[in-house]
Image (cartoon, rainbow over all chains, first blue to last red; front, side):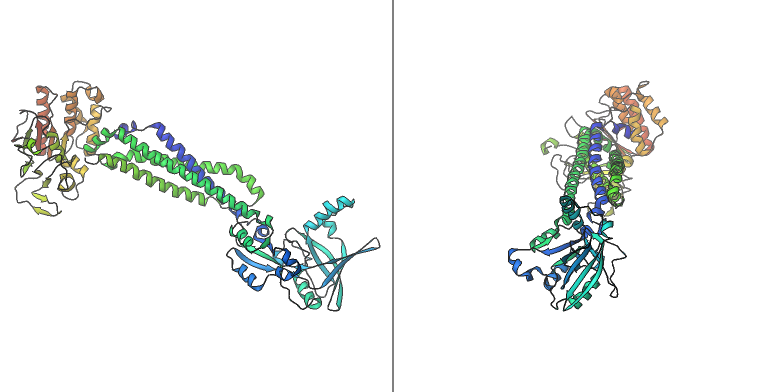
Length: 393
Length: 242
């Protein structure tokens, strides 16, 4: 009876308006949460451990430093400061050879030779796994890693212009050559091969224990320190990273920080979208509360009559609370389905590109929180609107 | 209402007026002299008065300080103590029986479904519901009469077939009778009737009055009726001139 009476007071267009705006708002918020979760591994750069987590850092070469190279080296103090930064997980130094080296290759009876330099980094920073990447003090074999760019430079630049044959990485690794090491009045010849190409470190690398040994054997005594550092970040998308390096005149491979910039803008866009969606939700709630107000004002007499014959505010408002609650719950469930459907459309393509993750928990938790919040707010206001009108004059 | 308007009233500005359970009262006044207001004060719909309205139960009276104490009076059960009514000047001293007058556990809605019944002057019916549904809507709260009893009561007062028509299609007199039936569908200590017969012919009025008195007698309740002139359908114990 009470329901029959109250059903007619509802305004379908307004109920639909609330349902629609709430659905849009909630779906956008939940989708933002879900997309964020799915992209989080990419943002945190967990997919490609090396690229975004570790960068090569050097000091800017300026006019004043060309003559006095001391300024290019990192002092103990600077290293310590860098290590203290929150976003820095670990700092490793490039070791450079302090002796003279040259490589020679015999080809068609002709002997070509070139001066070289060596550097080394801790093995854990390398993107190459090779059994040959080992140095044994008893053996004459010295493995070398060169940058991928060198081969590309040759293949696509030099070979092209000089009509020379191109070389594949496999072929390159078959070529053997000799390495001359000289210093402190001693010298030694090694057989050498390129055992890998690195896309990450722009230097000619030898195993670290070889370099340490060779530096003490052939090198000059003076410790020069490092001019290049490998810095590992805890979160490469941290916005403070570019700021810090900019402020301290440090040179950092910019492309390696593209992710962090992208992540920053992505987060900004997400925040923006979420704020808009939250505003939509707030407006939809305001809308349903105003709608309730209108219903109550329109049917003032009916509500007062009901109250006068003994119906409590709770009895009178129950129907409206149930209607609003049901719409809210159904809306949120619909929004979850909508988000899952949209996710289904992008997730396949996305997971082909990188490892997605996160799962649904944050999105579902968000749904639960939103639902609880909306139910409390809507029911509270509906009850209050009806209580106000039935209050004794 | 100013003091000059209520001068000579048997109720307003009197030190106290008591309505007792088990007795019948007629409150008589010309229109505009506060009959409906008085009932609204008692029922707790309006708080626009100075003074206090107190509902006592079992000879005990709850005071403003919230303590229960024996009144010393020999009142059988519910009764009202009306003190110095003057409408239109709501102040902090207004005291509603429905909020504070009864024992703590009683809520406004309990009072309106268990203690006081009110047949409103404007009837307070729902025009979109049928006569039967209007009564059932009240009875659902109290579960006091069976559907058969309600139908019998309506049949006794309404022309054939009217009880299942929307109240909007009924005449004013018919609606008044529906409202009267509705007011009887609850337990009460006192029933308030605001000009119940203003649109009913004397024959039907007697019918309604008999039905009301039957229920009042069964429940051992009190009756307060307001009217413009003296009416003789009820055996009143006391007549107040407002």
